[in-house]
Every structure is written in C-alpha cells, then in structure tokens.
Length: 463
Image (cartoon, rainbow, N blue to C red; front, top):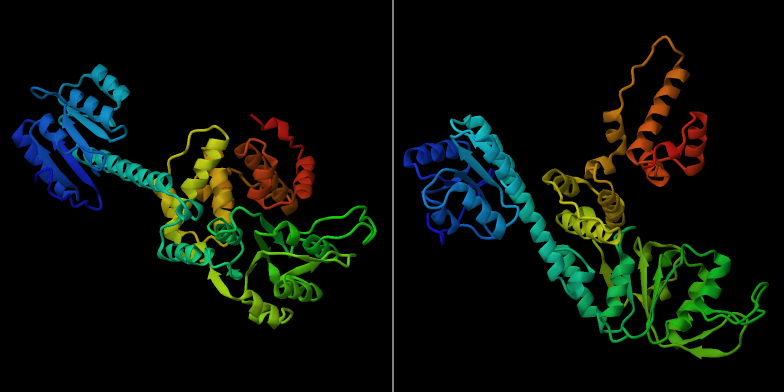
C-alpha cells in the first residue's frame, strides 16, 4: 500500500506497524489482521513517516531498536508534528528507564518482547479508540471554528437544521410576519433573533416578550405602554414594547396565552400600523415586524382569534425537536462545554466515546435547553459523565454502600438510606446546593428541612 492509496478504516482501526525485521513484522501483521485491524507494514521509520499526517486515522506501533532512525526518534518526530497521535513502542531489551522516559515524552504505551498477543491487541484497541475520539473532537472544533453567519447562530449539520437555516435566510429580508412553531427548549427565540439579524431591520431593536410569563393585568401596559396616571402606580409615562421595537422586530413568545381583549388590540396595531398607550388618546405610528412563537398549531387554539392568526401567518417556521436531529447533539454539547469552560477559565473537557453515544441515544425531552444545562454541569464537574448527570439516581445509587438492619423499623431504615443519599449528593457536588437540588429533584425548602433533620451542614462538603 502506498501513501496515496485510500485507507479503509476497519471498525477496530488502522495500525501503522514499523519493524525492520521482516519475519517479525509479517507475523505481527497477520495476527493483528486476524484480530480485525487493518495493518500497514513499514520496514523503517522513514517509510512510516510518509504515511503520517494530521488526517491519518490510525495509530503507530513501532519497534525501538532500528537502524538509521529508531523508534524513540520516530515517536518524538510524530509527537512534535501531531500531538496526541498514539505511538506504542515495542522492545526486547527490557529497559525500564527507557520505557519511563518514552512515556514522559509522549509514548502511548510500552510493550516488551516477547509480547503477549492479547495484551498487544488490547493496547492497540484502546489507542485506536483514543485516536478516533481525538479526530471526532477535532472535527467538531473545526466545524465550530469555521462557522460563520447563520451556521454560527444555529449549530447543527443535520438535514432538518440545514433546511431550517435556508428557510431563515430566505424569509429574513422578506419583512413578513412569521409564526415559529417548536417545543419548549428548541430555541424559538434564537430563530427569531436570526430572522432579525439577517434582515434589513438589524439596526433596529429586537424586542422579545413572553406573553405567558407576564400577569394579565400588566401585559397591556408592557405591550402598548401607558401615560402617567393611567392606573394606580403609574407615576410617569412608559414606552411599551411596540414603540421600542419601532423600525425593528417584536418577538411574541407563547402568543397562544395572550388574553382575548389584547388579541383585538394587537390585530388593530398590525392592520393600521398605530398603537395607543394605556390611558392616552394619541395614535402613535409604528413600523415593525412581528414574529410570533407557539408550541402548538394556533388554529387548534379555541381562544385564539382566527383573523389574528391569518394576519400573523404570512410564513411559518418549524423547529425540529432535538430527538429528531440527534446527530447534532455532540456538536451542540461541545459548543456549550467550550463556552462554559472559557467563561470559568477552565480547560475544555474532551468527550469520551461513551459520552458521545449517550448524547446521541438520549431523547432530550427538554431539547437544546436541557442539553445546554447538562453541558454546563459537565464542563464544571470533571468527575461526572454525561450519563451521571442525566441519570443522577443511578449515579448516586451505584455509589451507595448501605447495609440495612432488618431488626430496625421501616421508618428508621428509610431515614438512614435518605440521609446517606443526601450525604453522597453533598459530597459529589461539593456542597453546591443548587446541583444537589437538581440531582435529587428536591425543592430548596424540603432539602433544607432534611439536612437539618439529619444534622448535615453544607460547609462540611465545600472545597
């Protein structure tokens, strides 16, 4: 096989085997091929270097004692050019000091001749998994680093998210009203922001308001503003969201929860391009784009006006749930882990293969919002895997070692178990009450009561 030949990467990986002894090299090649690896045999270090590049997907297994350029020199050259590419060294000389020195200089592992074939295969398998993992993380990082425009705004490579990006670019400058549909946590506000930022209104304000989060008694004032004295407590004039969004974009999230009487005022504002402050008589012209968002089809909402629906429904965007684009989960996770690590001045964690598999098998009922929270926890707690965070009850129960005393009343046994669970959670999260609350799914007051009951102090578990 020459350098230009394509390398068909087997499930178990590719091995660049370097040994100047032809008989040893060929017998090792056959053994590794029988174990499921693809093997590229080289009789010298210089020949091996012709295969090495940043895109090389395999690992290197090299004899140490070779003429011209030995295995240690080969390893040093590889480590200098491509840090992290695993190099396993093989020697028949049993030099412990040399082995320690080689490991310090970057060797992945060191195996003595005559070697145990099973141990060699096991070592190579681990090295191949490490290489695959490094290349996958490199691919994710390169994708994030090279992203620009809409790709940097909406992270994902799945067909559904790519289609959504194209639809956003198409709609952005049409200046039409839009309804965005998506489950909680899918990123409806982010999509609305993207529509604004890629439109000619980008120099104006993007003004979000969650119609479901504002008390009905206040939402009219929030939207349209009020004059001084319009109601008790209105000591001065207040500009509403409509006026503030003039020449920009108004985003109405959870619009399905808007009261009926306000739907009428919203319809009038959209039709006539004017608003009237609460307690005022002056008509105020506004020029803005309205983007609405809902979790379910507004046509199926009995309390949502049909005429307002048609006024808003000039265009629609549908955001896929994360479970429908699981191939994007590692990319999103890597992004949020990096953001968290950077903001807390920490090194970014590398995603092990098991964590990547967990990310792509979990169904994410909370969508991207849930994934972001898990990524933040993952970045800050180096002891936790993705599965530990997603399934804290399993993580905690696996660490509990409680011997029940059947002679005690059930209430006493339950109390002992409960106290141990809380102790373990406090220890695991180093006294971080917020993380303990999330892990145990307990409200703050209940957790405080139980800690007091069992004499547990947060300060005993902080760093």
